[in-house]
Length: 329
Ligand code: ADP
Ligand code: TRP
Image (cartoon, rainbow, N blue to C red; front, side, top):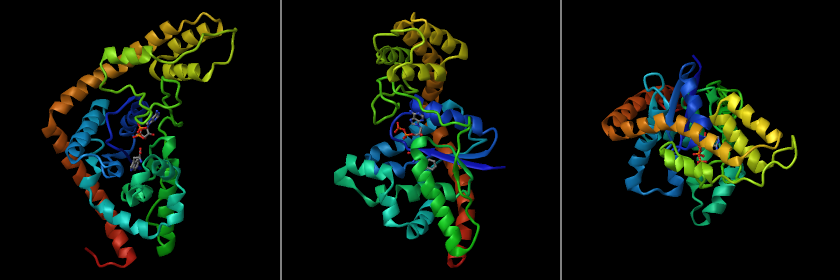
């Protein structure tokens, strides 16, 4: 069975962007592929989280993964820092990766601009750590958003280069993979193109109905349709994209017609969106609360997940060590 791996950094609660853009497809994929999902806590160190927050944030994402429907019996969930094999591979990959190519990665340049006082080596080698996450399991498919394409290109380069240097075919070249064939981008309701933590415009899976309604009702709009069948300006297009994601096809058509014949009232559209978001979020939220209260279960799942992930990674590392010329361990 084909293998899949993906992870999310524990830097806050999951929001609708994470859910529709990533976790929902994880849930579908676990039925078809051998999936491993993890919590990228090492990657979150680039911004120096407080020690007391580290474990809590991992448990938060673990509870949210489970509440969304990831079944650890089908797809183990592990915490990145529990699998030390990753670090060994990270070191080897770093030896074959050039400063110039790491400096050219846009996310590095952006982060360096955002935190000029802390442009650390971890930030620079973020892509090789991500490559190690992926290559240690020798997977072909990695479900990640569009923003990760450059990191994925680096992972492929790491795979190719290792294979070439040693004349082996150990690592397959991992491909970005979208379960429903296309990457989905959940827009922000504040007029920005993307819902994201750093954009500060998220609807979280933990939000209650009232909070959700408030956030949706505040969505940026304009004066309304001015002519029949006119093109939608970007903020309105974003609202419709949102509607398409959370509502039924029928509902989408209903409002689209209203736009086309100039009878659309944004209040109605927002109410509909709020209602449908609540329908999606409410059952997930309830489960998040249940799982969050059961830290024993969360830790047990993480422990079992780590065991399975380490088994997969250590088989790869055994080969890597032999190929590089180290003695068997
Ligand atoms: P954030 O942008 O809030 O910091 P992350 O960068 O941690 O979120 O993203 C974690 C995962 O969720 C990635 O696979 C990413 O592609 C996906 N993701 C985040 N925001 C969105 C969005 N608005 N639409 C689609 N996918 C998203
Ligand atoms: N860089 C990814 C993000 O910001 C998180 C991540 C780290 C990841 N390692 C990974 C995703 C390996 C997929 C595979 O969203």
